[in-house]
Image (cartoon, rainbow over all chains, first blue to last red; front, side, top):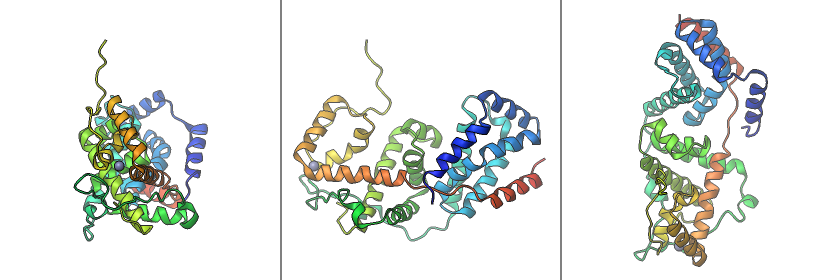
Length: 216
Length: 90
Ligand SMILES: [Zn+2]
């Protein structure tokens, strides 16, 4: 796991080989005309980014590789359907997210995890069911290694439905706004919010439970 | 001049209970609560340490998710994919 180096990586990429919007448009035009050199330039420029984006959805190298292959095949075959109304990187991200979602949906369902078990629960009068609610953020770092939290979050992410996972990846990892996510996934902003909130509550519940406290 | 309502902005809501407060966390974090609801939300937090604790752990969870990160693409894989594409296009 490297948290900082991939930022450095993208900076150095932009330092030596950033494509301007104009370069990009020209390259796409050439890809549309079947120019393999232009396609290779697009591949070289975007492959690392697409891989990282794919990995966030699928969580392992082998599946991420399949997604990257699929995405670049589509770039070549469907270049004509890129009309230039959005940024190329946005179009590419949608291809990636779609391919990754398809991959996730093909997975054999593991034992269903009940999200409800990790949701907050309330008394009839609307107060938290188990009180006091423990604020584990205060001394969390003293007892548990960051790596352990990351493992719990990763496991919990893998238990979300593909769509819920996609919403969390886009919001909390890619830092996209709710309207952007809504556009990428073709669901309403309200649906994005509902899924995002529930998924975050689930992740929070799993962490809280792992620390030995009630999720409520 | 009347401002166009922002996408996703929620209408004024009551914040009498922890259950109501919890349901507003997402809009609170993106600053989408209307000013009255935002004030009621803050007031609830002032009298409810349970909701403060809950909100803190919700925010911390987002921070953990945000800090998950991954290796760059292995160079062998990049070569494999390049070969695959050469064989499958054109
Ligand atoms: Zn409360």
